[in-house]
Image 1 (tube, protein in one colour):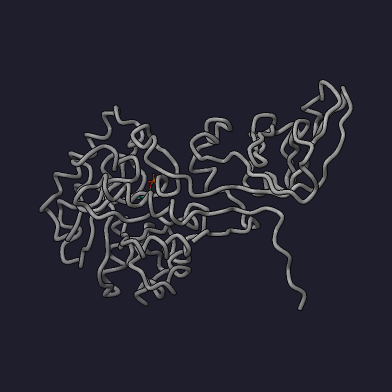
Image 2: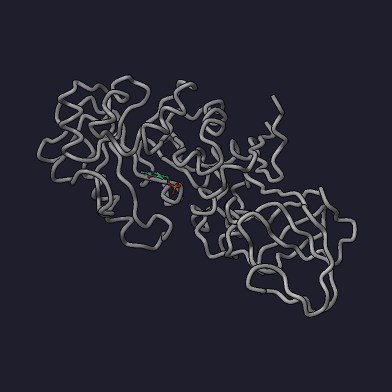
Length: 348
Ligand SMILES: *Cc1c(COP(=O)(O)O)cnc(C)c1O
């Protein structure tokens, strides 16, 4: 067997920062428990590695979307809830007990009841019109007799603290208190946690902020960056005055200069939106992305850094809130698009 060499691009992941962010949210949520949304492979960082670390600091509620995601976490034996509930074809794995479903429709509830499924959660829609049963259905007894652990709802506009939607949804959810046998109630995602105590109920379900995303200004200065994107220089080259770099010649050298071509591109989640506006660092020197980001390659202006050579590693500017502003791509999309071929390396 030939050893596969390390990839020329990697995601450095800071386990201390991840745990710091969870603790910050846990403090914000007061007496409510703090869970973790680890769907979409832990927002691109790696669900197993994220969940393992958060369990070690006290997280006891993990949320994924699908049963395949729950199965990936099963070796950790953690309490996992599957947000999209149960289709017929999910029933075997759901009844195996690796996770509990969050039931979203009358059909899912009937299916779970009929199979004699045990403990479950239910999602009620309080105005987002995305997923969940209606409050009126709850009032009419749809959940009676279920072994209901947590009643959930989800905020549509939590990242807009001034939106009147928030209070309307909170009040609609609150009016269900005592109307079901649920042991707990849960409404807030990351941004909802920042809306204050009335939004915390018994459990909050942050995702984005755990990974260093800032859904609203309330998080400024409170979170640490978890992921750093790094790539290796593949070639250093001279570009003459008036010559162009990259596809469609979107950058022209104003004078003779040097360019470093690095081993990363939009297939890794470093999107074309960073063309001519992204940045990277080599030690404490900043380099600018010049020309279009390719699928697997990016060009950096290296004129002022003669020491930057083939094989050197550079760090791309990928601080989530800033990268989102620069690229105009949502923080969620930046994280969840981080490519599968990036080598993920945790410090602890
Ligand atoms: C994804 C998700 C969350 C986490 O949301 P963030 O905005 O990432 O904090 C919480 N609850 C539900 C139902 C979700 O789908």
